[in-house]
Image 1 (cartoon, one colour):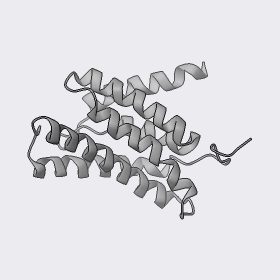
Image 2 (cartoon, one colour):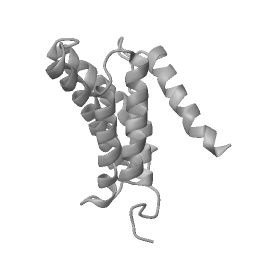
Image 3 (tube, helix red, strand yellow):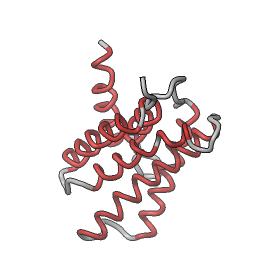
Length: 155
């Protein structure tokens, strides 16, 4: 039963990303899943999960394979460093971290498409979308917390 939870959450995130709109802009819910896995289970599992979710997002979008993969893999890998860096974990750090990682994912995706292909929109519109997605996801950062043990510690 537990093995079905993550695939169901991934499918639910992709469905809600297409159905829910705030000011005509869809949220980036799949980034929250990648952030959670990277924060809770370590940077290697976060990287692998980010690659899988990013590749799936790129395949579902049907445009280019790579921008979503690169952005989500970066989020999955770097999320662990919020936990074991210079910071003491607080809910405010969770809010700031999720907002920053959502913005980083969207910015990486936009820049990789704009640099290697044709810009999908203007830079001003892209900045507006990135800010709204980051603010939408930031509220959920209160509820995403790291686990108690260090996942990357040697056994």
